[in-house]
Length: 282
Image 1: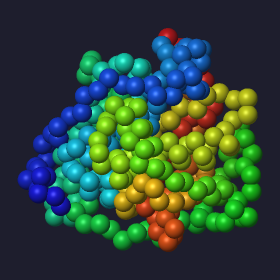
Image 2: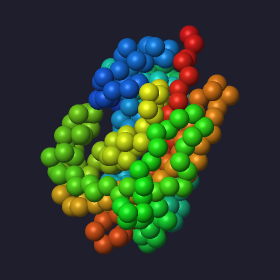
Image 3: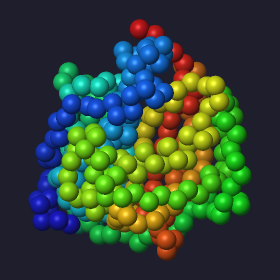
Image 4: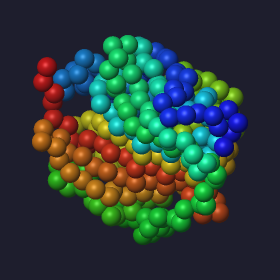
C-alpha cells in the first residue's frame, strides 16, 4: 500500500473535498427543476453520479492512483443535493491492516447532515481479475428489453453488450464539468464518467415508457484494474432484483461489468434506483 497512508489508524480522517455541487444534468428527468418540483423537491437534483464522483475524487487525492485501480465503494443517497449547495466529501479510517484499508465515507452539507454515506475499501494488493459474470453474452443472446413498469422488471435477461471508447478529452471534460479537474483523468477514465456510460447506454433504452423520472439510490462500485482512456471496452449487465418501498416507490437493481478487449473485468457496478417514483409531500 502507498507510503502516504501506511500510518493511518482507525478514526483518522482523510482530507475532505469541499465543493459547490454541480447539477450537470439540467433538464433531464429528476434533474429538471420543473419535473423535480412536481415530485415534491425544491428543484432539480444533483445527480448521484456526481456525488459519487466527489467521493471518488477525494479518495484519489488521499490515496493516489491505486484507488482508480482497485478501490471499492458502496454508497447510498439519503437527502437531496441541489445545484450550488456547498458539500464536503469526507472519509474516515474504519480499519487498517496489511491486507486492506477500510473507510467510512459520506457527503455532508453545511448543516452537518449527511446527503450520502457508505463505505470504501482499498486492498493492499491488486486482486486477480474476477471471472466474467454470467450476463456477459453476445448480442444475439440479449433480446430487446421491455419498458420498466411497476412490478414488471425483466430480471435475469442480459442487456445488449455496448462498446465504449472514452477519450482523454472526454474524461478530462467530465472532470472539469463537475469541478474535479486532475491530470490523471487524461490517462485513466474518471469513474463517474464510466458510471454515466453504464446508465446512459444500458438503462436508458429500457427506461419506463410514460413513467416517472428515475432516482438513483445507491451504487456499489469495484475497480478491478486500470481503465485507460482511448481503449475499447464493452459494458454488459442485467437486472438482478426488484422491490417496492412502503411509500409505493418501485426499485430496480442492476449489475454491470466493463470488460476489455481480452475479456478481463476492469470495472463492476451494482446500481439501485427508483424507476417508479411517488410524489413527495412537504
